[in-house]
Image (tube, rainbow, N blue to C red; front, side, top):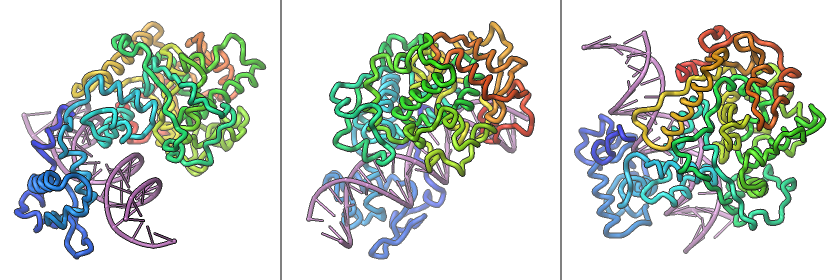
Length: 464
DNA sequence: AAGTATTACAACCGCCCGTAC
DNA sequence: AGTACGGGCGGTTGTAATACT
């Protein structure tokens, strides 16, 4: 953003467009409209911009299809609308997002999910597209960094009216499309706040403790379908509840000192459950589908046992990954879930590259970025490296979904125990789970990655 | 230092949906 | 009911910047 030239100063203009002396003459990528006039596609020229601006000044916004008629502009109405909305309209704020804006985006995304336009309404001068692009790059960056999407101190506060009539166990989101629910009249955006976000700005501590990341990623991948489908808050809660049952099933109790999921996932209350259930029906594998704990861990009984996720066997008919509206795994920097990779990352691990190892090396902070995100990433890296140093034996530990491993000779369960996270939802249960369900593997680091287990080229490059 | 590969970002397009007529 | 239009969003592409060899 910062490094990019201002759109108005230096637009990307195809070569075949540069020499164009007339917009009417330019037919790059065009198509015929009803009047057999070639509608131009591709980047707008300054001349076109001027025409459009002039038109809007005279006629106002709207009726975009009339632009072509009135001005002779060889652009379809929609193209005019987008151009105006995203680039030409006044009060557009260009340039990098400020830390405050970044924070707000995170907060809004936690509330709304991928409702870019609605988010843009809260960010004066910003467009939905701009926010979307920002978010997508942020997602990618944080995925690679192994960081959770949301800061730990995100606080989900759901107003009472959001609880309404539904019991947390009653909701059904599998029979509704996301938009139906998101945009439905009954949908209320929960009050989500970043508790002490500003105060903690410089001391965010939600970064995954890196010595644990391998194990936790294995956890993701083993019992990890608990994580994978966490593409929406509701599913997350439900899955957490399922995982709670998992623990109970595996250990006969869910009360052996372990905090409830709500406890460490939400600072405020469990009210969130119902509301988000209405708002985020993206879960590809609704927990209500009565998967047994083991089935949850091994959807389709084949996805995880061999460590590979079969795209041909979507958990619930679709594996399309919706950007999560919430990542419940990161409410507490010390939480077990936070010490694991992000759900999205887990999902990515499954979907994008089943053999993807998870590197502990966080992406370096981009010098082109500044502000909140950088602070978060930097903090994560700092903490990660700090915690990684003392024992070092798990440094650079990587895992593959197909190989729940002993990293550097340390078993996963041991690593989990090392994690020794008192507030882990699984606590030692996690290691027990591993003991029960994970075969030993070898391999210890990304560098030592066997060729056959090498990450996809895409990820390999990203992990560099 | 130069060439190449990768990444980040901006911008556009296409599909879909809701609404108004 | 059908159509036109506006709007939302996911996906894709092109370019500049950066990293790597």
